Amino acid sequence: MKMRIFRFVAFLVTLLSVSVAVSCEQTEPAPQPQEDMLSVIPSRAMLFAAKDNEADTLYVNTNVESWSYDAPEWVIAEKDSNKLIVNVADNGGELRQGNIFFAAGTAPTVQIEVCQRAVRSIRQVVYIEVNDCNPLNILEYNLADGSPFFDAVILFAANINYDSENNRVYLHNNPNVQALLDDTDTYLQPLRERGIKVYLGILGNHDAAGVAQLSAWGARQWAQEVADVCCRYKLDGVNLDDEYSKAPDLQNEWFTARSASAGARLAYELKVALSEKCSWPTEVSIYEYGSLYRLPAVTVDGVKHTQSEFIDMVLADYGCQVEPYGDLSYAQCSGASIQLAYGDKLSETTAKSILSDGYGWCMWFAFDPSGTGGVNNNLEHSLKQFDVAARVFYNTQMLPPKMVYNKRGEGVYDPLPYAIGLGQ
Image (cartoon, rainbow, N blue to C red; front, top):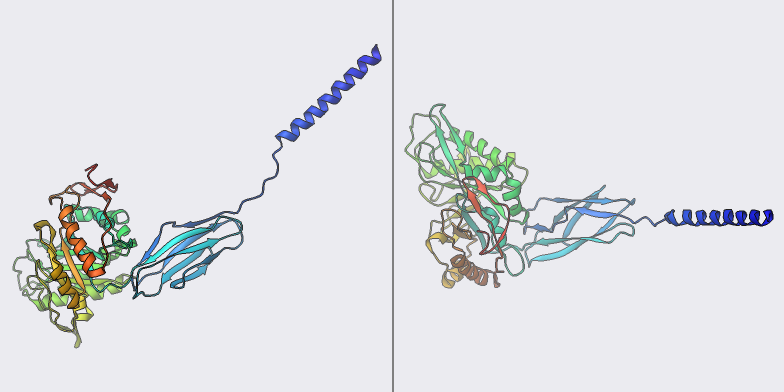
């Protein structure tokens, strides 16, 4: 009997030992193969202008020792540690589209889309009334190939002001302009990332300061302040408009008589200051109005500077064209200026004429698809005009816009997109 009990106990001990061993084997995780990791930041598509691009940088993160990439032949890429510094060769042909492929170990391949716009014989520039319109709306207007319809945006507008108490000319930004500048990464840099240049519009503000009545000394001083702002907020240049200024005191060292010569001198000083302070290409453009008409060459310290040295673009008043002067070409001038808030139109006949004449720009003013500001929603009318431009200038059509961005009040913009017709 005792022997049987002993054998039974031994059997239980053996069974328990096996059970524990099996249990331990079940809870012990089996070794898993280590997966390689690969990510690229930023992961968005890269869009370059037709020429004069600054290099962009992609950051590659991986847990293996080496990584590789494959890019289209028109992409210029340089590998530096965990970075790929990317630029593109100038493009005088069709839109370029492709991908940069990244590989590391056994990780899934990562691809980053890269696109480059082609040189267009006519480019589109739009003034947006920042008191009314959210600049992000411009991103919604694209040609059939996906490239932006607009090449440049002018923020209309900051002011040249005079502080009589402290005797100084200064740059004044109303709350709407300042809000956009303060939040440039949200409202302005997305345009620039799409290859759309952003200019700060500047005009008079009912006092003694004006863009065509600063002395040579005054122009040099004020240009430094303007260039500092463009550099700080990452803008592509300025646009000058000679309106709403009073006659200055000619005994004051800041001022001189209003003239085209004074306007040319300010344009020259701005061009110099911008090039010195900004590490990217910057431009000076002119709205041909007031005394900013047929600006002469400028002589500084005995050296003559012709118009093309300090003027990149000249835009006509509503319904007009700019005739080139000095050494400016048609490519630097607007062949049409359409005030969309007034219901102005671009006819096919006009479009064909400015194309055949060799004009380089078509100007649009007061586009606002939202209607959330002081300008009525002019989307339907504007799209008809854009369609004419797309068809005649580029032999293509516009993609239908899907979203709209709103303005919510004085100095308040909404970064969120809403389906057109909803959420407004």
